[in-house]
Figure 1 (cartoon, rainbow, N blue to C red):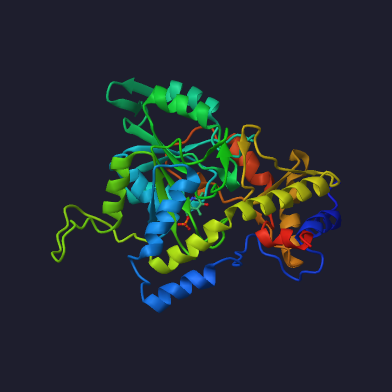
Figure 2: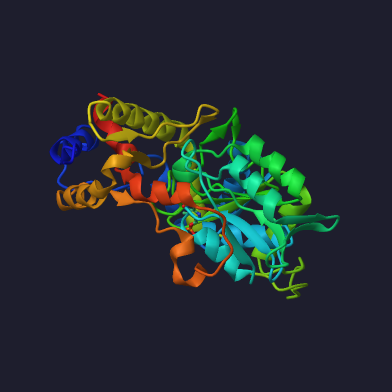
Length: 393
Ligand SMILES: *Cc1c(COP(=O)(O)O)cnc(C)c1O
């Protein structure tokens, strides 16, 4: 017999997400700052497109906020990842280590480079890559040569790794950096979900040679659609700007391009929204923390599930709050999803693991038992900033 009380669980979520709301989404945006003013300025001045003062300002303020040297604004997080892979020199047939438990963008970006995703397991403490398990695995399957790390099985070079800070929770970056150093792996952080998340006091995105951010509509802050590359390497930053703006050679009138480039730049309209949202990040973070603390409290009272807490070495943005179903109760997952969604409370399972998708089912992979376990147990619950509003007055 099940020990999860579905009504009690629904009630617990509602206690935090609003008892009177008829429908509550997983993560809805909120525009209560200078959004109207800045977007109006774009329309009034007619600077709506690929250049404009908000693009420059957004890039400067993003670098300041994340504590990185440079930020390059782009059309979305997937494009940011795609360019990050090119910047570290990923070539066709290289293998790139990524968690199997991630959003499709991470795997797609690798595929865009004609490189091969190589799937890695997660750990329950962070919901992200497990550096220790990875190291043991690489010890077994790799040939370390002066020119890099090679997969003995496939003969291909393993060139890079992309950790994902899942739902905003940082992976154990110090441990991961050690593994990267030992196996000569380029590190790219997929920080799409972790704007405002800090690892040992420093903002995520500072450990990778280049890192990717996303400002999609469901992220902690949004530009409508958008993303950014952040880096502490000034040369790579200049190259990133160049590649994402069609690789045009600067000149008053001539159109010359010195390599294949991309039209990946973020329009000024979107950057205007971004500037206004970034101003509100401290407030967003405080509210997200208040929401997660409330969830933590109410879920102490609910049998059969536990509320996921940030790893001890991090200060997380709690982008998407997560509950984990007890192992003995995993067959209750779909009932929980059905009951909550049918009652207007949006909940979601974690993504279908990448190695199970047809496009990636033949890619190399390690033992993925922890990710498989988490896939059965993790559920995201409503997490919008405005859920904290009711507490204010
Ligand atoms: C959102 C997200 C991205 C990028 O998504 P875009 O929608 O292209 O901005 C990449 N990786 C992860 C893990 C994400 O959650």
